[in-house]
Length: 327
Image (cartoon, rainbow, N blue to C red; front, side, top):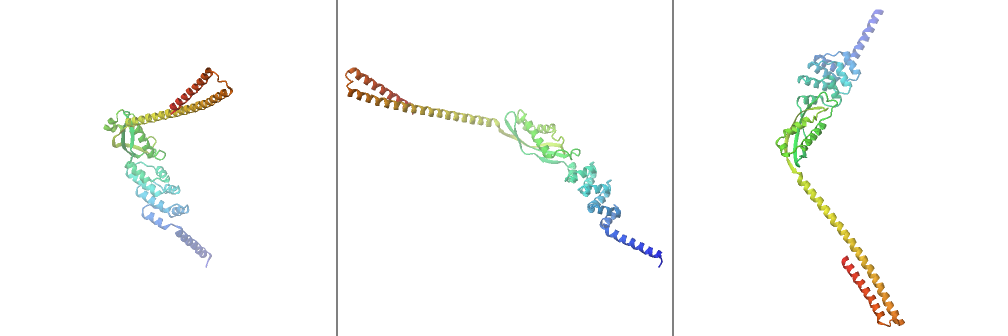
């Protein structure tokens, strides 16, 4: 066997080995799927994608759908979506639906929405059919103190310019409630607002509640409105309660003052009583000493003693009066 034949055999063996390795490494399922779907992808490209750990099922399915939908997307675009943590298939489905609905959505927008965890298909659907949110019952008083109860629904559609960075529908709803309350509070007569609920619609639109929001306000509809309580009744009741509390406070204050006066009178009575007792004892002692010593010798001195007793009796009467007034 010549050298040429040996080289040929070695070369053929190497080529055969490489072909075997190639067919083993090649993701044949996705290769043939793309080929028979009219979205050919070269074997080397598939092997390269596999080596970069691209989600082949997602990217190949997205590529096939993009070709069928006639979207101007490349494999590199779809690989970028997959490597960014998004789903290339979801992005292509969203772009395909948007194209059918004649909504201009870019690949970058769809990719950003998908990567942020938002369903791009839902965004497209809300571009076509506005979402409706119902505000909670709003209750506020007009200038005539009559309450107005109103239920409002808002129709919102996606604002593509602000969707990625704008405020959500909860902020729009809060602004709508604020606008409704402000309108009711600035209305002279509550019944006129009930008769013309369209005034509330206009007030909400004029408030520009969708400024800088992800959603654009399409319509604001009053679905229920009626009159509530008359706040004047509540204010009068509150005033009467306050007057009652003030009267009770004054009565309690007078009672406390009367108790203080009573205690003072009783203390004064006790003081007089003690003083009278001391003086009576002193008188008895003086009479006894005078008799013992023979000093009570005439009527004048006896009268003096009687006058002293009379003064003591007067003080006793004053003490009794203080006691009675204290009670």
